[in-house]
Length: 213
Image (spheres, rainbow, N blue to C red):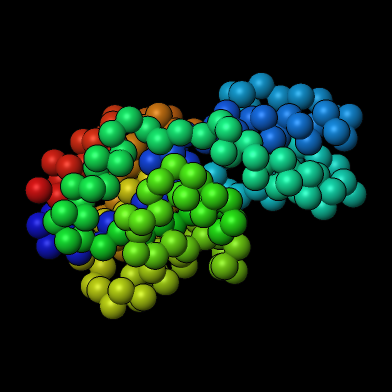
């Protein structure tokens, strides 16, 4: 992968562990609306498609707009209190930038919350571009988000690597025609990820260094 010039990262489950923040905001909404609280496992499996799709299966249609407002208001503080980088992520990003590679974020999260995470955890400065689901007609697994980032940098697809943690990341990478590495430990099982046949499956984000040396 020596011809790589751009690495695009997903955020949640890839670089950042925000599951506790999501769980707290989710169940805050459930309490506020008098709905059933959900276990961390159920919430975790629903993460990745953006906050609207996170709430939609659990909230009556008539209450969805209210639920979304409650969730987003709560989540601004929950992200700051309950999110963390995965081990050695900052070191990894420094090493990548030292190789003079471009870095971008492709997240189904709304821009506001992605920027809260990136700023609070001190890694925004490593990224040349951030593109999120609220700026698109279709989020992942549709390839639009990756294709737009690639066009912005005026690169060929064989010069790009995408790194995510979910089935939808593997699907988005495949549909965009870019090499994709999936990190296990997010909300998708290794068995399900294997079915999508990404270029590589790794157990730890720091293993990425070996593919860009």
